Length: 110
Image 1 (cartoon, rainbow, N blue to C red):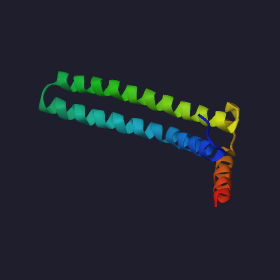
Image 2: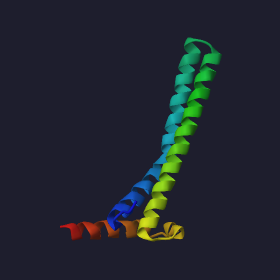
Image 3: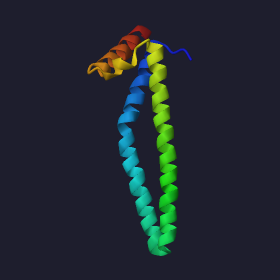
Image 4: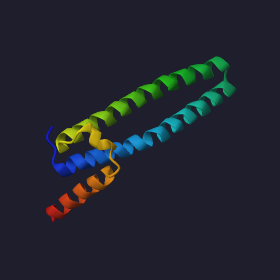
């Protein structure tokens, strides 16, 4: 998959934003699973609540692994298209570089 510089920069920017939001999504899923399990436990029996908790835990773990793999692959694809090294992602000015690429490329499109 060959991406333009602007597309690769946008992909990398989106992947980094998704990576930042991942912990908040995990907390939200855990809270929802606990609330649903508590309601089911209250309405039925404790073992149904436990079963709901275990099933939601498995689904949450599966979703977390898929999202993590997706973010990683998007980052690697963008790095490859930009011809950068993985160590370039650790720099403090990464967002500045990405915004510069995105703004420079959009001005050239006009």
